[in-house]
Each structure stands twice: as structure tokens, then as C-alpha cells.
Length: 98
Image (cartoon, one colour):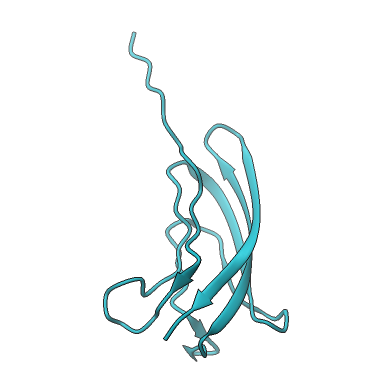
């Protein structure tokens, strides 16, 4: 009998990204090995939702209404379910740098 223990680790959400097409940190993504369900909402400083993501493979490229947003701080709210049934709720900020 072979028993496989999957190490999920923690969900990682970067604090900043720079969508300037230089190939480094151009998108804001949620990272985790065992995410089975995901709901992420990203808000501007006025509380308007600017992006919603429902998959760990989905990332935000910094666009709001078809153009890259101005440099600034955005807020996110994350709800995730992991393979082991654990749920993760997190709120935080994202700094969009240009």
C-alpha cells in the first residue's frame, strides 16, 4: 500500500505587483498547492469592485475598465477551500506599482 501525503502549505498573496510588461511581477495571483475553490474580490480605494477571480489560475493584470489602473493601493477579500476541506478567509492590500 502506498500512502501519499499532499503538503498543501499556505496560501500566498503578494503585497505588490508592477503591470509594466517587463516580465517580472506583471500580474497579481493567488498561490497555493491545494486550492479547490476560490473567490477573490479586488476593490479600489472607494470600495468599488474592480476584479473578481474564481480560479487559482486566474490572475489580475492591473486593468480597470480596459486600461492599467493608476499606481495605488487596492484591497482584496479572499475565500478559499482546500483539498483537505479547510477554508481560508483573508483580507489584505495590494500595491500596484508603475
